[in-house]
Amino acid sequence: MKIRVGSRESSLAVIQSEMVIDAIRAWDPSIETELVTMKTKGDRILDRNLDKIGGKGLFIKELELALLAEEVDLTVHSLKDMPMEVAEELPILAMSKREDPRDALILPEGAEEIDFRKPIGCSSNRRILQLKKMFPQARFAPIRGNVQTRLAKLDSGDFAATVLAVAGLKRAGLENRISRIFEPDEMLPAACQGILAVQGRMGYEVPFLADFIDGKATREALCERAFVRALDGGCTSPVAAYARTEGGRIHLTGLNIDGKGNPFTAEAEGPAEEAERIGAELAAKMLR
Image (tube, rainbow, N blue to C red):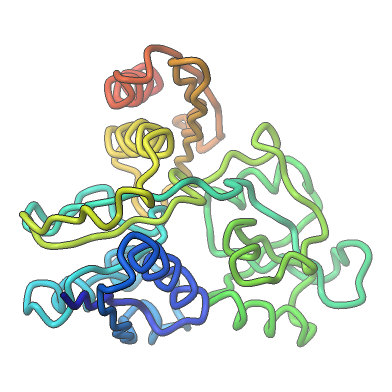
């Protein structure tokens, strides 16, 4: 048996895809695996924000086409980067255990504090809205690219700081670049931040990922995605969601903006097995 795993070309994407390959080999060392990398449109166009060129789907379109053409059997994504709606014929087949979901402040190498004479490099409306509350004196400028590209731009002196997901930094072995970690009550994470998703063709069975799939993270992801989906939150939306499961119950904190563009949060709690309902109902409450 051979399994071809599709991945974006970036070093972090490859690391994350290799985590899936390692899980397959741990399940059955006799399974042959092949990593197939490709550059997506979202990776190629770095001079414009995602909302100007088509949104998050640009990071998965080429990989989805490869799945449909049966050039690969599975693809691996950061779940936070996947659109809330995926093609019925290409479902999400597995979700990983959640890595640290928080965001981190990164300063240029050698810096000890933010130099507010320069802008903070950030293209996320979700992050910018929350950063403005913490740093009202800050200015912001867009920054695109993979983790290494953003760090290079930061260290070149163009930016005072940037913000990246702790999960990606840890997986890439770049924890030493973290200057400060924002707690969720300071900066609510993107929905599903820290969770990996394996996408495949409808009907493709993945028994070899039994030990990779995490039920707790899956429930939290379903809750968060239901919340964002109900608010029609796309890649440029400031919508955020963070669910935590404890003792059979799930607690969700959601962030949206009011009619004046000001962020506000609300919370909901209920049985973990009703995760999607809880997410959708909190969104409806916030819309009202």
